[in-house]
Image (cartoon, rainbow, N blue to C red; front, side):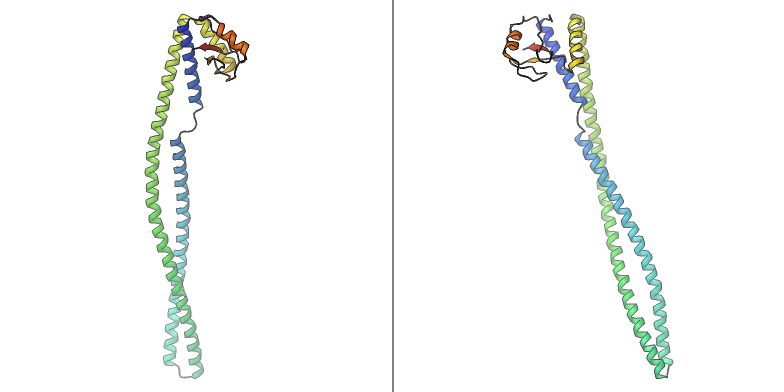
Length: 241
């Protein structure tokens, strides 16, 4: 393909720009997006844990209410036993009352201990709720900051891609005005191989990255400066620097 050296450089610049756009399309997920996804997952986990914890506290409070009810009944029974002892004169009746009173007092102590244990568990859970609330607020702040960082990174990527697209369009316009046949040849090779033109490094093609045979290297080097040779392996147009 006949092409003046200046236009060869334009063709190579177009190939570099197309390659940069291809890399941009395959750009991995932004680090900011990965961090944002992790924070959102952490927030969801915290919410789930808080919901489970809240249900547990509600169960404890219901159990505490039942213990209060049972304790009130036992205290009334204790008072009745004491009143009965104060009035009873029969020894057998007194023994029955004393036995029932001792049993009632044991149950009162046991329930009182259970209530205290439940209160401590409720207080500990409430403290955890306060801590989780502070952590939730912190995560929300991080999510907001990371969202802003992600959006800025996306905007930067879009701006970079837009600049590359403008550069590509400008290069194509310049080539179309001066050597439309060269642009057609470039496009045909790009369609078939994914690379339209590449640098010749002296012994290899930077499109297929193969070290060329000695005969192929000699032919490329012997090609006139106003002619663009093709890689004998992949067919890409080779621009010699």
